[in-house]
Amino acid sequence: MDPQYAHQGATLGVRSPDHARVSIYGPEFAADPHGHYRWMRATYGPLVPVEIWPGVPATLVIKYATAVRILNDPVRFPSDPSIWQQSVPSDIPIMPMVEARPNAIRTDGNAHARYRQTINDALAGIDLHAVRAMVERTAVPLVNSFCADGTADVLGQYAFPLVFSAFCQAVGCPPEIGERIAAVNAAMFDGVDTAEVNRLMGEALLDLTALKRAQPAHDVTTRLVQHPAGLTDEEMVHQLVLLFAAGVEPAANLIANTLLLMMTDPRFTSSIVQGIPLPTRIAIDERLTSDPPMANYCVTYPQQPVMLDKVWLPAHQPVIISMAACNTDPELEPGSPLDNGWNLAFSSGPHACPAHARPFGVLLAQEAIDQLLDYLPEIRLAVPVDDLVWRPGPFHRALTALPAVFPPSTPFPVP
Image (cartoon, rainbow, N blue to C red; front, side, top):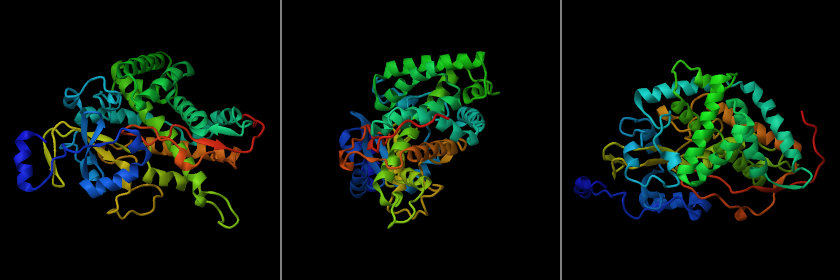
């Protein structure tokens, strides 16, 4: 708490969020986030003092109504981290995920409107009718690479390479540049060598920008470079950082997390007694509700101390929305998870996921899962659920691997 407001907190009987902070970046939290959320509600209420990295404080929002207020109030809760950045070491591994950038997620006002319009317009050109064929072109060779083995890491051998390939097709990224981006993109989420991540990502995306300026095509990157907003090369790089960060890791983790649900929940498995299993789309929507792949994000930075739910939020300190906790808020009276119109998996307010991005991401996940189950209908989890390992980190909900077994088969015809 800012010292000048400490006496006000004492007078009002409210607590400071600067004490007894809860770590949300380690393996203990990753192993059981919902257990932590329940404890947080009982101990702190809707606003929880957390650390997102050792010595880096933040406030985690775990109440749905409070989150919606924050996400729809960009005046009191802006998204620009520039001042906060000056107060923390520049090389903390999570920095590429939260640092100031001239793009739609880290700006407000006119700059945000300009960047968001370019993103929306570029994504609007994606042909959703082509997604199935796009997935199939990649899915069959991937399945053929492990179908004879009878075992596979579905996340590493299928979900991630499939999503990356499909996304690169939509963006117009050739394989030689895509391979460079893939390794760096994963490192960004895992918090590995901040300076090197930024350098390598910047170089690869600058090369992609130059390619599309010289050789335009029918793809997202070309629509960005040709947009009337006139994005500079630097602005192009940062829009593409956002697109790759939002379009690859979360989608791959959504596929893996949904497959885990479908392989372990009897509602999604076929049986004479149970009747027809529930479809993939319901499983996806349930995962987006209970365990979205970006579990804690939508970061804002109040420009001055703000009193909210009887807690003083310090100026220029991150306020993070827990989409997973808010979507499962016991005070919430949601409707069906289907279609997720009410939940925060795609955020809310002016910085919500662009409308044209949502159907592409969900359809990509659905097609990837359906095609895997078409080829390997008897696939099942290879280890007990409790033996699975969840990747630590403050923002994502992601497995390290999803080991599965199935009857070995001969390779399938490539379409």
